Image (cartoon, rainbow, N blue to C red):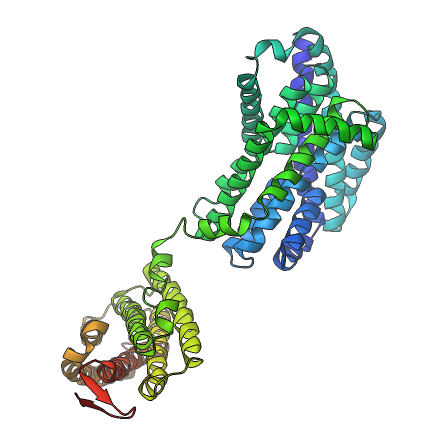
Length: 551
């Protein structure tokens, strides 16, 4: 290997990577909102998802860009995991278009006759255009030109190397050699973060006679698996659903690659037959492009039936603490057909919901800055539980319910509403506290701290499992809080009249404690009603649906 060959190879690879970056970035920008609209809307069915993933990847020439975009949509809740999986499948097929471009344009045409005009026109648009989309299109065209120039440079280097170096003689025969080339393909994609660049490198090496078809095919499989590294890196710190989609990408590429490796000799035989039928010619590049497409399509067809089960399995993985707590524990189909059991389970689940709301209230009372991250976690848990409880209650109402259960159901839902309002009041109280900018005044701080302590005392008593036994004491503490609230309100009004507080501060603090007051009242109402419903549904009581009497 001469120095000229090394320079040609390194320079060609540099042009290829630079061209890929300009081409991908330019096409993504030129596409405007198309990528966002298609990915967020056109994924209603598996076929739609496949088509959109294929089309957009073919357009921007980067399966990694499309996969990362899909992960971003799932992360933001704009796309479901079930729909995004098919977009990933489609993007794997779409990325094979790069191999066809290399095989039929980059290696067969007189590259400079195509590449240099593309660079000239693209650079001219890029520099002179005042319209962002047109400039981005110019960037993409210039990228295409550089991409083809890189292929030409590498093609020349590999043609010379093919006469001096035979990769087949440097690797172990059989499966070990195939696995070694697959590892090389994976490593190239991981290092360059572009399976398209790896494919171009492998195709030009095969076309130059350096790598035989079977080993090059193994390298293509490795490069295809290597593209999952971008998705895995993109989900660090992301939501659970985003991690599940990245994991699905890994599962699909690994299973597809494993299947292709296991049937590689047979698959290459089929490729040669299909090549002759389509009249594609006997060059290695077109054979590898066809191979790349066929094994990705085959992977989709094989996994089509199993995808719902794989997605279901993944939904049980990467579970965060908030997701685990936000899952229903007592409500399922086994209790739905037995009204008494269903009502008891519903009361227990609403109790869990109330515990989260109570925790949010205590956080709001103890949060001095009005910015506490744990509050948002509990808020997400509460929303999940509310949705689950609402759906279960709706299903219960469609069943044939005895009078006592039917009359208790609206009360249980009212308890849920009380907890929801209490949580909203907790949030609003924190927002008003952030606006207040309380001055460093000992008297004010002591009065407000005392009022919050009285509110905390009420919420501390409101533990759902203990509401029946502590209800009377909670009522006493609620009265004490009301007296403390009125006292604090008067102190704030006095402070504003003496200019110890500005009018804006006074209003914000009054609104803050007004929300705290309503939060406490809603919590007491929920405890009172939940205690009543629990008594009515207790085995020790029996009633006619309107009043319960001891058995």
